[in-house]
Image (cartoon, rainbow, N blue to C red; front, side, top):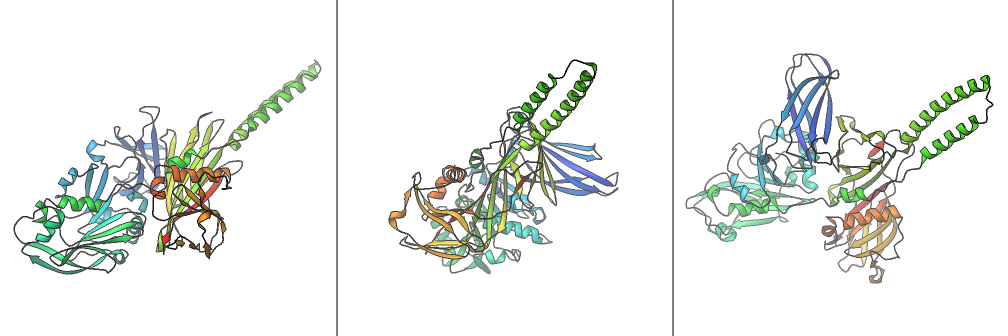
Length: 557
């Protein structure tokens, strides 16, 4: 299955190699762009081949135009050794995606009747990603059967991180099925005994579908006190609770077995498990539009210097010796101008970066969303390195882009023509961070704990109102809030630098801004006093603007 515009995990099994030495796998993913049929983003993965041995190369690609096939190529010493074209059928492009770990690869066809063009893919545990970002296209993961061997530590951590950052996990409670140790603390209920009951009339009454006649085998759940639950005839059959920003659900019924397989109310259960279609709180494209890059006119200085040199040559006397010296100076001037022009072109390249950190409650992690834009005003090649463990993708499809993946990180290389607008990128990742903020029930007391860092120009934002707080130090701080301290978001009382004001407006006025501001409590926003760069432009004459913003919803207590 392919979700458009998000990273898709790609495993390529190579046949036994005929050589030993370095090789490279290149996946050419088509994209929609101004040049129809020519826009392709290439993802490259270097590897070491061993003669006579096959291997699996893992990559990730972003497909924006499924009408054209994905092309996978393998190179040895720069020469193409293998090529495979992978067409993508319309049935492989769902609107929403459910991933099921089940030995029974059937029973969920009726989910196509749900809104949103739901697609279902059956996998084994070994196929689950080892990077949480590769779940970004998934709406629900269902665990019914876990094959042996169990998930490794990287797979467990990736699944756990995805849930905490907003993913949804459903466990079908069956005898012998247990989650990996990393995920067990996230379960809203423990498993009780399995029993067979003659009927579950209460279940039909609560979900509007009459159960078929006959007995049903269910697993009784023992929900935790804080968990939401559904009972039938006094028997707890479903439990759920929030895990960070995500949700974990347990069902004591098995929808793959009769009588639930024919139960008309099962679609409502699946619809509730899928939940509403979510969107990231931070829209990278909107932020990228605000990354205005201004470059110095270095080429103008080179031109002035060159003209001055030519004017100086006109003063030479027309003698054989003067002509010889003039010719020599012209050659030197042309060489120097070429070198100066190339230096000016390289040093005029600029990269602007904006990072938003979103702490997730008491989980000690924060989602990182970085938008960046690079421009080469006079045209030329650029090379950008991306921080390790960050997954990057272009925001707008473009040709001449190569994404090289390795254990050391990601490298982006491409070409911009003279006058071409800035090329935007997005990177997502996670960082260890413990921070919290709470507001009292009456809205007059604020408690913030920022751990080891402080923030500048902090303010509370709620709908169209802003409460300026100034700078907040590291550690715990308490502030009183006065009702008359709230001002309009566009008020002149806010004194923010232009770049910071543009980015904050992009966060709160973008497609997801309404969801942020529509919460029952305000959000805390401020600028981190220190942060490491995510994108680094090689050869830039000077670093571009860079800003890291903390975005944290307040708790009410």
